[in-house]
Image (cartoon, rainbow, N blue to C red; front, side):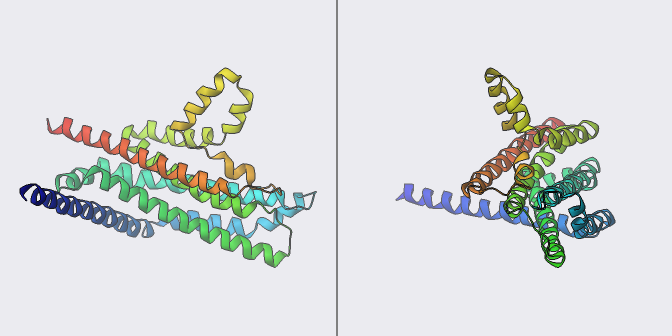
Length: 273
């Protein structure tokens, strides 16, 4: 009977602990989203991207085959570039600035767990990015319909994959902003984006023995080339690809948050010692 009572107490305690962590994560994500929406940078930059998306039908002038491949690739590249700049701006304005200003120390001292703090930041950034990607997609669809122009069939699948890849990019950038100093973090953020779009190129240009090294590299860096590769294709694409990318993005995001929270917890304990 005593054993059953102890087990019950532990289960209740574990449930309350999980609820507290979820509540902390949602609170940080909500606060960060509000701060993001009050930031002029995000409005100016994303309105500019929105105007570019609306005017993409102009690029049909360069689409000599008339199959919509050029415009599809431009659309995916534009949304990807918007995600990169939004993510870097988010890290500069929130992650780095708050950490340098002592906001994180205050939150961690007030019993906020590092994992909840970082998960809230990633959640806020992902929600912001997904909303922007959806607005761009709707605007692009309306503009293409209005122009009555052809479009490659792989564009919308590529956009779905891009939204999943953005999740991995956001998690990687938050982790880099925590682990490295500001200058190195910005360089690594740009490097992650550039190298993330070279996976197929590196794999094809590497000898069979070196392809293992490429595979290991993309266990650390999210593979961002799938969406850009599919953006202009008009060939059948297996639907299971989205499931594979979704699972990979979730696993990568969870591991990035765990590694960054471990580093943040270690840094806090070293500072207190």
